[in-house]
Length: 179
Image (cartoon, rainbow, N blue to C red; front, side):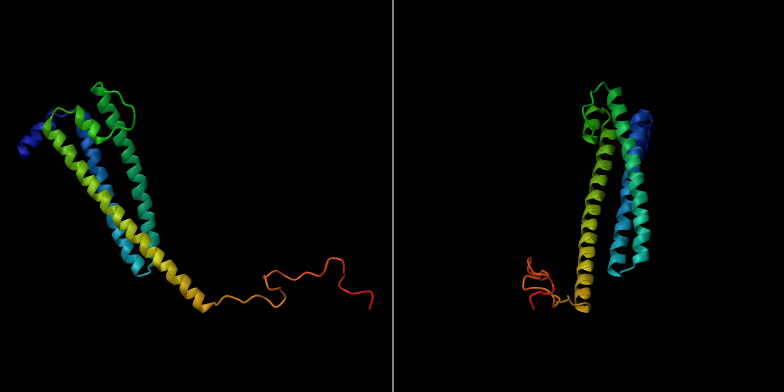
């Protein structure tokens, strides 16, 4: 099978091979982001602020790289569809690409990469949701602790029952001149 794959890759045009390589990069970048999300979970549980800050920088780097590679994937998909004489109405999907390919091995390779990407993105989404919940719980704990340490102040003595400062009657001055 390895020889057949090599032979077919040699027959693939540059657009197809480049698209497959770009998808591989997307899978690897998302996998790296997933690993960072797992580390983030550990740092949240350990309340390691410095570690979280470092991971946020890594996540930003991954996100920028993913955006760049995704833009590249879209451009490659458009070029491939144009090569095949297909009109492009929106951002082409991998399914659109698979429909114009003739080589079953290439179609299978694209399907495999598509499934890998879907799996890693789904797992990343679940991990991010877990991190969001853990962060929310941490904030609730901090708020509860703050409320216990610093009780709420009661209303001041110089206010009426509604909590508004009392006002003098409008027609009387502070000193009653009749006295």
